[in-house]
Image (cartoon, rainbow, N blue to C red; front, side, top):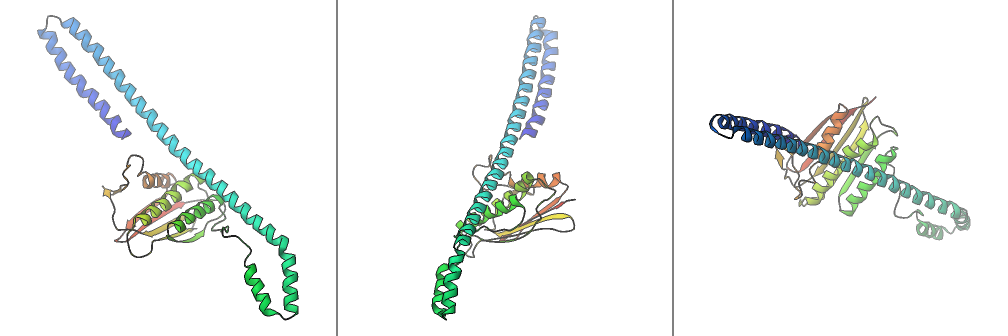
Length: 284
């Protein structure tokens, strides 16, 4: 929209000046008050030019503000992921400390039960004891802390929405792609998949399959999900199906621009019931 307005306004000014010039020459030749009219025309033209410049500057500022808000949103998401990651680690370590504290007593009880050949009670005790961990286990999909926290959060959302998610991740601790840009690429693609699964009315269970690894110095990310088969496109561009199209629909365009920023490539394809996204970015 910003680019279109920047093109439209100069063209409009040019057409307006041509019309005024013709009118101006006509008045100079046939009007008794040509000097007064010419002064008024000149003044009005200057005011209009100033007004158009003011509009362009205003649109530029609004565009910059929207970009700033978007970046700030991504940074907030990164911060929340880091906090979530630390909280989960703290819970996990707390469980470990609790089990370590009691493990000696458990060993004594099990030792005596087995020594007395009371295997039935030993098995009952083990079943009662269980793993000793609470239901919120800290899973490690990758050693990359930000991405691991992101995958944990998205998996939690999928579970709450009855979406089967599988993750096959093999990413090192450090990647030559900023955490900010990784969140844009992976976060948007997973969010789109979750939205598609939530809207799907297929009888089959919703699923999201994610694979990511480093292949021949390339960061590769692939995600597949089932959906209802309805895709809105215009000139090979995917359009959002949400009612608030002004504040939505930037996901894939942001993914594309971020991938191209690193001289990478992307491919989006779909059939009657599955959507597939593929991203490859060369790294050092």
